[in-house]
Length: 378
Image (tube, rainbow, N blue to C red; front, side):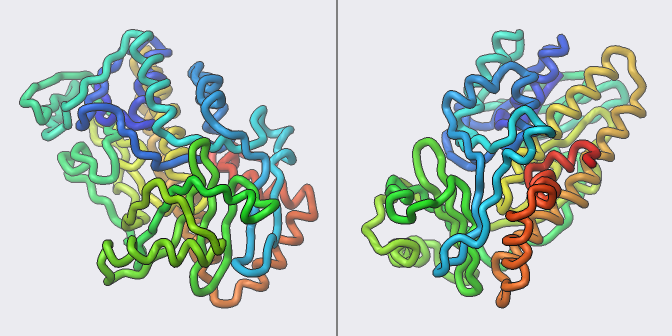
């Protein structure tokens, strides 16, 4: 079994296979596991899956538990605070864990190798050569590898997806996203702030997230300007959040897309995570939905290898694509539209009402926590 990509999705898929007795080799383009922070929120269903794989305890030891999150006005304080404890009857983990994905991948790698799997670095998949009974890949090192199946989890620019000629339709947002990681203590500057905060403002909405090492501040940034210019004016924008001298550890600008592959299976090749679907980061659903892809596709594939019907695998593939389209894409895009609304007063009233009603909070949080994307809930 081959997996392309040693990010959280590829390594989760490989470990899920290994736990079923299917040894997997992961082919990674880079010289080592990526050290960038990237995604940092783990939702309850992901925690359940990582627990089943035997890695959750180590992740939680490195992360922060966030039991609440807030919607705030840029200049008016808290609109509503949502408490995930209302989900205690729905999940053993009624909270988020804030932890950079770069802290999870070494854990996954160690467990994978202990289970007989392997990670090969400097081995980017360059060609995919499908066969009726399997697949052959050619790596950047010129090596050829054969396998019965391949899972492509090699990111938004997936060479596996490109090699199969699979379309990747969708949109690119007009603005770029600027993310700054700071050592400045936002809890001291904004008393009562939660670990996760969505801040409404028609002129400049933002997101404030706590991780074990930093606070992150995400700003929308207009298109058509030079990256250097936007990075140079970052201190000014940060002072607009709190008037102090900010200690910035690092900052980056990136474009954001909403796209879904036209199919998640081509013969003996499956697509998962960003190789299959990408979305904006508002709501923290990208990495989480990729982890869900990895676990569910790996489980269905292991069933096939145990003699089960491929129709069951196809059903899981269809369900994951439907979830990407109807749940993840729609919710993350709605989050973007609400944060930037010119007159969001009606939505603010709605948030206040649901925060005051435990039954309505539960219904809402079943969706934002992604529980509703995976199972029917009353």
